[in-house]
Image (tube, rainbow, N blue to C red; front, side):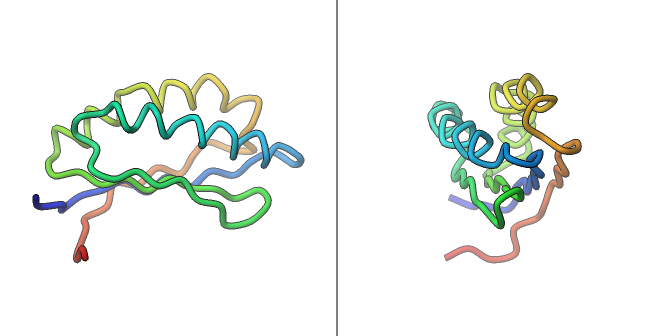
Length: 98
């Protein structure tokens, strides 16, 4: 398995919406597990309002399938209520993996 690409998404919750955003991200795990092309999927907390998602893929098809899949669609639905601003979504190249 060669993991050579990923996505980093940084999410800023509205004041007092951090716990709701965390709960949403916890639910996202099941959606990510169902994605054939997603190798790893992490949701993380940086601060009370800053959260993120990092996922990895073996190929561009997997990354594109994820970007057009259930998690971004769900985030678009809850974003206006939970997020202070649009998500910062960045495709990344994975340099090294252990």
